[in-house]
Image (cartoon, rainbow, N blue to C red; front, side, top):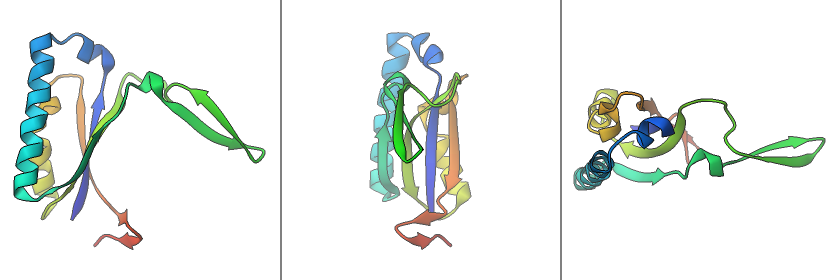
Length: 123
């Protein structure tokens, strides 16, 4: 089964961390990635740039309209994700709990099963 583990960040929370705490998060992600590679459960992972660099695209009257910045007025933004392949939801939750962000108040880690991938509905 495939699961998307998404990490929701709050830039204000991250800015309040010390350099040592930020380094510990990075190191923790590195160890997590290596463990997922060893177990064969990692499909891919990506980190996203700051939401201030986002572009929102919509189509109006058949023409694309592009605006700068995040789509939502929110404190939390999608910061990155892990796409994993593991045996069940419980294992996905177990893995998500190992992500350093899950231990920081104000940051969120969400687990959702993939419903559709590469043209096939997931079982």
